[in-house]
Image 1 (spheres, rainbow, N blue to C red):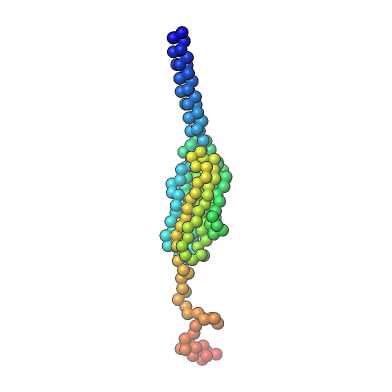
Image 2: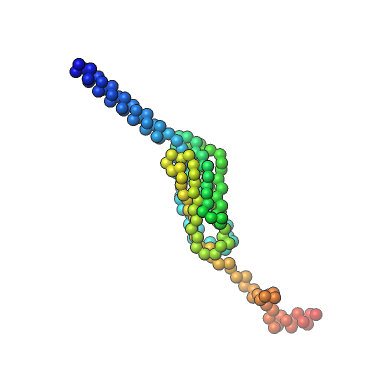
Length: 159
């Protein structure tokens, strides 16, 4: 009877260990997304400059990574990404373009939805300051370019 109890305890322990190992392997199975950076700071950027940046990520999991959505926080930010699955160990990218025709500070986000087991919803951010539009250096009035008195005399004498 004592041997039977010991055998039952050992069998029970073996079942628990194998069940825990099996459940752990199921939990560890899937795509895992890891970004090189999660925030891009443009710093000061010229008016109407190229407001593009790239967020590179790697699938460190053991299943293909599929990004189903990249939702922008406003209309001034445009994300784009490959709709193809990213194989384990491979890298992918999310391109983000900001409309730099809006002067002033900005902080925008893009929410990434994927099948990643570590973060199925992940937020990447961009920020910076768009500088005012540069002056052309040519004086201008409501009628057209300003003409100095000496240039006016040249124009009149050439007529």
